Length: 397
Image (cartoon, rainbow, N blue to C red):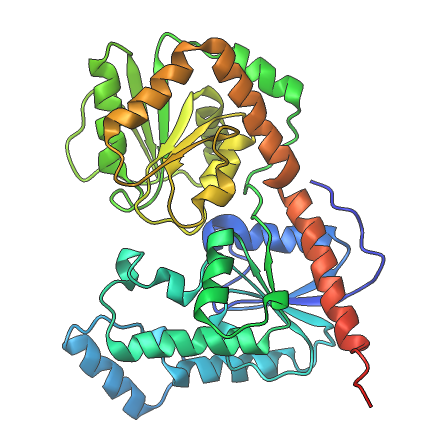
């Protein structure tokens, strides 16, 4: 993964509320953002693992809400967000940086610094409300806090980079933000890839089509549509298409038939885990994740790097990653399992059509779903922000 070097030397601070050097943070995206920015030619420093600082009286108030089982987020309390801003400002003060790149919007909502701020996110608070289960049924105060946080971050930043059209559209529809400050850059696959189209053709030709192998990846069985994918695999077997379902990332909360292979959580941080994950992507025929809610879907980009077609739902940011007819298909969340089976069966039984989609899937990865492409676009955007901060437009006299 080599990104064209920047013609300018810039010192970039990558910040977050969590440890940005943790390879598992944001499903590995934090690690790849750091690596990509360094390969852009930037000098990168990191600031993370912020403390939740609040007073004794704030602590009592938080405990009272917890005691009442109120559905609210403590991390959205203004007192905590203000302290995030103070901590970041103090830790950045002596680092001689040119620009701040924040992973998420919350840490910079109250950040007061002279350097330009860019944030990278896969969703806005407004987009998550009543979409993800954890963001459903929030108390009015948390709803106000969340929208206020997002608006402050959008107002303070010089640029907001979103991973999908869905997230960017939410920012423009729900908040007061200059459209020129909103940019969509799809995230790259969080996987090492030196494969070529010739490799993909070899991988595809080596697949046995005696058994249809479905791959399901997700840590949340229900939100990711685990019940639906099990229903899909069951019906395919009933239709006379021998099918295996390989489950990665979670344990189904129920007894499963013999055709289900449970792999549990696989850490790509270990050499053994990364090799197993690669093998599953290489040997499967379809990645099937019929999510009920999804901000992006990194697994779809990773599947494309192996020429593995994806079958998914048309929700959230998924349509930015899975382009219908190219690297897979998206269906309406209410679509019955039989319709998923129709799509899978048609491709599985038509070897020429399957091979063509495998090649098209890798092409989507090569052209837009990798960190080289994303990094080059980020480099251009960050340099543009720094240029504007250094040479602001002249004011009319």
